[in-house]
Length: 248
Ligand code: SF4
Ligand code: FES
Image 1 (cartoon, protein in one colour):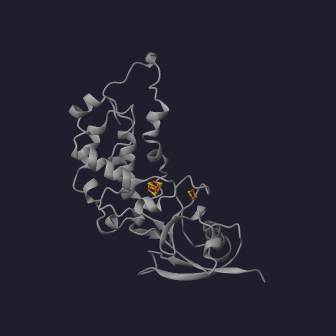
Image 2: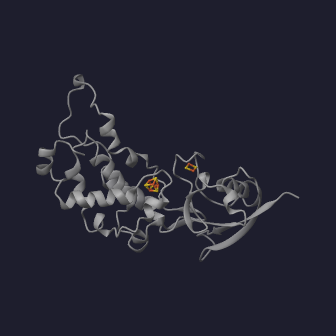
Image 3: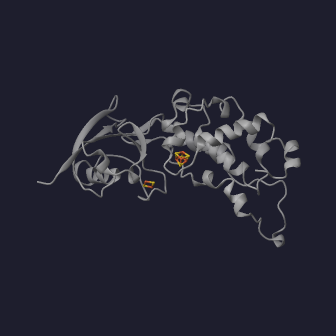
C-alpha cells in the first residue's frame, strides 16, 4: 500500500453550487512532488472536473498561484514534502473565484496596463543612431523589479487590497517603478497620475506581506515606499528631472 497524503481542495462550480465547499482526496506521497503534481494527480485520476491554472511548471509563467494552507504560493515551486501531514488548497485570496481554483484576473491585468509598463520617450532617436545603451549600474537600478512574473501572490497577501479592491496594488506599482528607474524611459510624468491617485501609493500602509510572499525576490513594498518618497520630493515631475539627468 503506497503512502498517501490528504489533499483538501476548495471546490466551487457556479452552475451548481451556492457557495464553495471542500473535498478531500488521498494522493500518493512522493518525496519529489510539488503541490501542483498532487493537483494534476487529482485531475487525472480522481476527479476530472477539478479546474485550475498552470502552464510552465517551472516558476516562470506565474499562472499556478493558489493558497496552500492559507498562504499564497506558486504550487509548481512548493514541495509536497513540506505538508506531509496534509494540506488545504484554495484559490488566491482577494480575487473573485470563477470556478474551483481559478480566479478572475481582469482587475489585475487592467491595473498593470494602467501604469503604462513600456518605455516611453518624448522623442525617439533615429534608427541610425543605434541602441539606447545602458551600463550594468543603470540596469541594476531596476533589475529586481523586472523579475515579476505577474503571479498575483502579492495581491493575495495584501490586507489593503483585501479590504479595498480599488488599490492599485503591489505588482503594478513595482512595475511602474521598474520603468521609472529605466534610464531609457521618460514617462514618469505620465505614470504619476495613476501612482499618486487616492487608490495608488498612498493606500499602502507598509504591511510588507507583498514582499514576503513574492516568489521571485521582487520587493514591491520597497517600490511603493520609494515612489512615495520621489512623489513627495517632486522627482517625478519633469521640471525636477532636468538637474538630475535621468536619475531613474
Ligand atoms: S511582485 Fe512578486 S508576488 Fe507580485 S506579481 Fe510580481 S512576482 Fe508575483
Ligand atoms: S506553472 Fe508556471 S509558475 Fe507555476
